[in-house]
Length: 103
Image 1: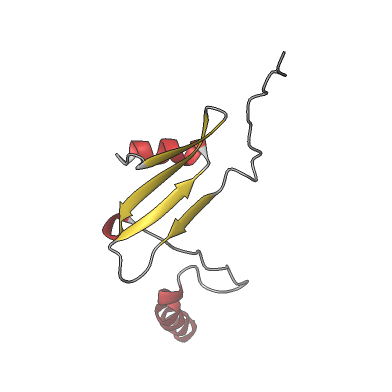
Image 2: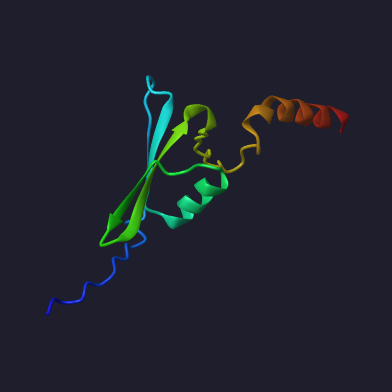
């Protein structure tokens, strides 16, 4: 009698999401093994173009996303003593000068 096959359960570290795009293709290619990301993409109306399975269980989804819909950013590190908005540094300096001259 064959041994029962245990279901595949990826670890949290294995539940990765990879985004690949280049300057020539108008689409970003996205692979995700994270059910959290699957739900977010479904809420945005994106359907997977392909699904990956292991022992019959779905473990990954592939998507194609138009570059116009893709937003990517990295937050700046907060520097101690720096103004909250980098673009406001000049306005902050002027306000400090006005305050100092009014005193």
